[in-house]
Length: 172
Ligand code: AR6
Image (cartoon, rainbow, N blue to C red; front, side, top):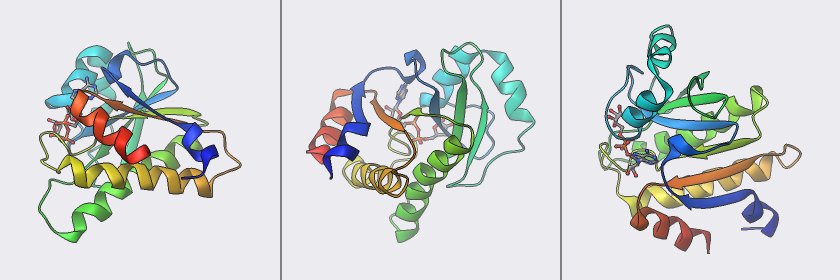
């Protein structure tokens, strides 16, 4: 990875709802009406106004992304994307990469310059961490490389030590 791209990416461990950046990404489901995991944590922290706005979005297809305001969070925006439910088919990787790419693309249209991602699909949706991590990092690095004129900082927010270790290993 070129040093310039590496400098634009940060790996942290913690709760994504506590971050102070322009935008956080939610690993949602197709209904966009809340759930467990990071989705539940984001809805709890953002407050009921978030669910009210999500109801107006009429769901989201797997691999696509939609945006809302951040409400009670420090962030201005939340991008909701739907990762694949791991099935072991090649389609999984395509859809997981789409989540990262479409989120970054949408962020750029909203003039977002710092964005934090959770490890999409690696919880309830069962995507093996060792397979998902290179897709996350490579897709983000490729996007940053092909948008070199746009100032974007990406944070991979890892909830646990094992996830952080996987990202750090991939970054090295
Ligand atoms: N901050 C950062 N990461 C978190 C947090 C948090 N507060 N909480 C959990 N994680 P998951 P998925 C991590 O299951 O696999 C929901 O019910 C978690 O440890 O949240 O994409 C949705 O509504 C894991 O590393 O998302 C969907 O139905 C990562 O976030 C379904 O789960 C993703 O785990 C989506 O499943």
